[in-house]
Length: 535
Image (cartoon, rainbow, N blue to C red; front, side):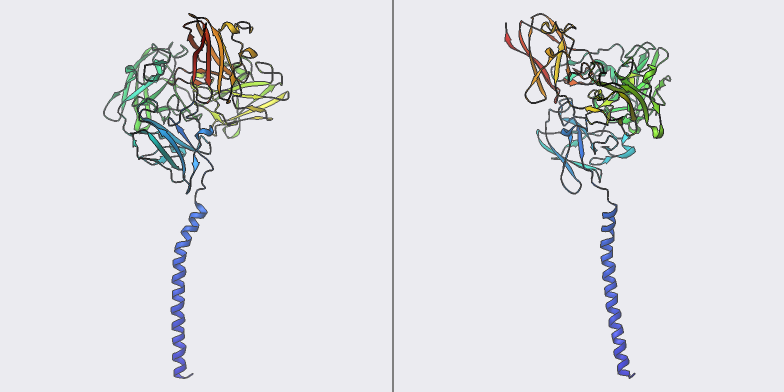
C-alpha cells in the first residue's frame, strides 16, 4: 500500500467515525425525547370514564349523591372534566354565597377527591378520609366553570373565588343536646334544622383553646339520647357550616373523617356519625383537634367497635328490629357478609313479591341504616337521601344476600328485579276524602291515594279540605306501601322531601274550606299546598 493510499484510507475512517458519532448523538437525543414519552404513555393513569361533582352547588334532593346522573361532569380534554353552573352571592346552604363541594370518579365512593393542603389541590385514596369538602365564597352572581382533573388531583373554579381554609368557630350538633327541640323551623331567611342539629345555636359552640384544640362540656345521662338508653349520636361542624363537618371512622375511636355533615356524609359504610354510650350521669368534656382529625371524650365513654351487620325489612321476621336474632349476617371470606333468605313471589308486606330491605351496624339504628342511593348493587350510607332497597322476586326460593362493607356494594343471588326509580306517587293522611280506604286515610296502597303527573317527577293531587282542621300526611312511592316514604326530614336543615327512615308526617293547618292542591317534586324535593278553589 502506498503512502497516498494509506492517507486516503485513514481519512475515510476518520470521516466514517465522525459520521457515526453524529448518528449516535442524534440517536441519543431522539431517545431522550422518546423514552419519557413512551414511559408516560405506558404508565400514565387512564382517564376515568366518568366524574361526578357533588355539593351545595347543585340544588335538589340528590346534590350530595354521586349515583345521580344530574351530578355527572362533562369530559373536556387532557383528562379534564368540567361543569358549568349558575352560582349566587346569596346562594349556598346558609344563603351567604358559601358553597361546599367534592369530586368522585366512576360513581365509586372509594374514589372520592377532597380538599388538599392548598387551594386547587385534592387528596384521594385512603388519605382522603382526612380531607374535607372544598369550601369557597362566590363574590358575584354569575356563571362559574368547575374543572376537575383526577389524574393530577387538581380542580379550578373560574372566574376566581375565595377558598375558605381557616376555622374560626367550632360546633357540636346532635342528640347530645337532650333538652333541645326536634322540629325543623324557618327563621324568615332560611330553613333551619331541628334545634339539636342547628349549628347556629349558641349552646353548641366550642371554646377555642388557642393551641389547636377546641373544648365543650355537656351534661349527659345514662337515660338520655335519641332513644333514652344512653346512646348518643352527634357530628362536629366548623364556621356554622354543617358541610364543613367531621364524623367518626367506625372502629377507630378518637379519629375523625372530614367533610361529613348530616346531609353531606360521603356514604362510605365505615364513616359514621360519632356514636357512643354513657353508663353514668355526668358532665362530659369533648376535645377536638380538627387539624389532625382527632377528638376525645372525658370521662371515658363506650364506642362501637368490631362492626357486625344485619339485614332488616320484610325479608325477615320482626322486620325493623335490628337486634332480632334472625337479622344477623354471617362474615365470610374477604370481609364479605351474607345471609340466606326464604322469599316468595306472593310475599312482602303487600303480598305482591315486592320486598323492602336495608342493613344495620351492630344491631343499632344509632349508627344509621345502610341503604340505596339510586344505583343497583351500590350501598349508600348517607342520611337523609338514602332509601330502603326495593326489589321484586319472580320465583319462590332461597336467596343469598351479600354485603361488602369495604366496596360499598350488595348483591342478591339468584338475581331479582330491582326497583330503582320513583314511577308513581301516592299521598296518605287524615283527609276526609280518604276516610274509606280501610285505615282512616293511611292506606297508601289503595288506588284512591294516587297522584297525577305530566313530567314524571312533579306530582299533584287536589283534595277538598275543611277550614280549622290540622291535617297530617305523607307521600309514598310505587304502590309499595311505606317502603319508600317521602317526608321533610327535620335534621338536615332543608325544606325538602327525603327518603330516609320514618320521620313524623307533614302537617297543614287549613285556613278555610276549599279545594287544595298538594304538590311534590321527587327530583328537587320541593313540596307545597295551595288553595285552588274556595267553598
